[in-house]
Each structure stands twice: as structure tokens, then as C-alpha cells.
Image 1 (spheres, rainbow, N blue to C red):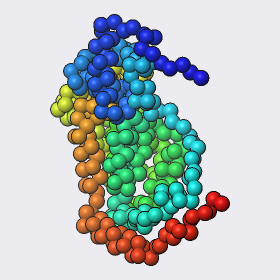
Image 2 (spheres, helix red, strand yellow):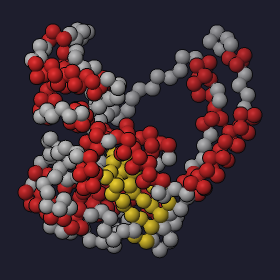
Image 3 (cartoon, rainbow, N blue to C red):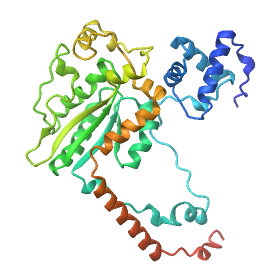
Image 4 (tube, rainbow, N blue to C red):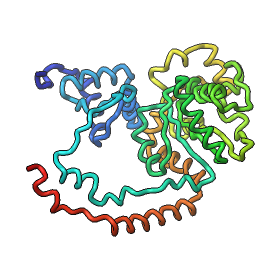
Length: 337
């Protein structure tokens, strides 16, 4: 059995005491964060520490008990499957799943919409921000984490092609980093879709071409069946960086350090500036703005009147179900005998 962690395992100096105190303040809300999130949260509060110091403070602080280990997460490494716990007894099952089961009845309002919307997010660690909003609107959220495997592209192509052929206006709302890979990743995905049923009438040139970084070029693409397809990049963009004074990525990836790529990115995207900013920074500096941006971006494609009609119908049918379903709790007594 592991021994209980004690603060005596590390005696931080004055600098690390200050960093730890500031990190504890960041984590006092109870929200779980990645190390990178902690760094940006400190930046947003005016604490200008080098990333390596923050990373070391988090690592050693967790191990020594200054920081709750459960509050620091690695969103890039999640379990493929978790064991189910089951129920204690039939009454527990009724309380948890059956009693008022009619409240689980729902209908997909998107069936009566002209559009079909998905949100594609480059950073898995931001799913906690995007997830509740997408769930509210019943919108699929995909954490792209850069370029996709062909298997993932194939699955997405089949899913989206079906919607397009139904006559839906398919819209992908993309949120990614402000750097070469963050701009090119969705272009690369669109390119790969051409092998699996969604051939877009556009070119996918080399990095020394503005279209290499422009996923919206030529969109929307019209389908003979009446549907259409477009990817809309919603963040990050230059306006967000300048408006909120977002800090640079403290640890850029190797691909974003490539001289040729950086040069063409400055030419076609960043207006000559050597800029590399992560979407995580916007979350920590202006979370409410980011949440509003996600919500507004989805609502742009929603017929709210039709959505309201479906919601009213759901309420009426839940009432009908509540009148039809009767739970005999007395019959549960003695079931364990």
C-alpha cells in the first residue's frame, strides 16, 4: 500500500512557494486543469512565470501534497473502457433508472432543421468547456487533436455524406490553435475525405500557398441532392489574440518550429508576425467569451422556432408517458429473499 504523501518530501524555496500559492488559488474553484491550463491561468492573473517553472511546481507540488493530484489531468490519455458498477438491488435500479423514466424521453430537433452541425475541437483538454454546450444543443463534439487517422476520417466521411445526401446543409464549426498545424489540420482532414466519399472541388496545395491554411476556401460546396458542406473556423483568430492580449505557446511543437512552414504562415495568415497561440489561452483569459462564441456559432444554424415546437412536443409526450407508467414499489419488497 502506498504511503500517505506528506509536504515534508519537498521543501520549496521562496520562488516555488510563490508559484504554489498562486496555483492553489487557481485550483480553488475545484475545476480540473491540465498543466498548460494552469500556466495560462497564471498568465491571465498577471503571474509571469516561465512554463518550465510552472511545470516543475505542479509535478513536485502534487507529489508533496501541496496540490490535489486529482485536479491535474492529462486529457490526451483516457481509458478506452471503464468497469461498470451495477446496482445494489432492484430498488436501487428503480430509484436510479426507472422512477420517472419518462423524463428520459426526447426527440432530436435537428431532424426538422435544414442544417446539421458538428463542433470539431483541436484540444481534447477543452472538452469540459465545449461538452456541456454541445450536449445542450445535441451537437456532436469531436476532439481532433491535430490530423486524424484515416479510420477516423472514413467514419466522419460516411456520417457527413449521409447528412449531405439527405439535403442537409452540413456545417463543421472548428476551434483550434493559432499556429501552422492549427490552421492546416482541418485542411488535411478535408483533403483525406476525398478518398472516402466527400470529394470537395478544391485544391490542396503545398505549404507555400494560402489555401494550405484555409479550410474555408471555396465553401460552401453544393451537393446535387440539395445539401451543402462547409467548415467554418471560429477560433482562434488574430482579433482574439489582439483583443485579449493572449500569450504565446510556451512549448510549440516541432512542426510549428519548421522555418519554411513558419515563413509561409507569417505570409498567408499572421500578417508577418511570428505568432503561436493556443486555444487554451482563450479559455483561461476569457472563458465566458469562448462559451458565448461556441453557443452563438451553433445557434447561427438553428431555426429556433422549429426547435421550440419540438421541445413543446417533448413536454406533452412526457406528460402522457407519466400518466401511463406506474411503478409498483411494493412488489420489490422481499425480492432478495
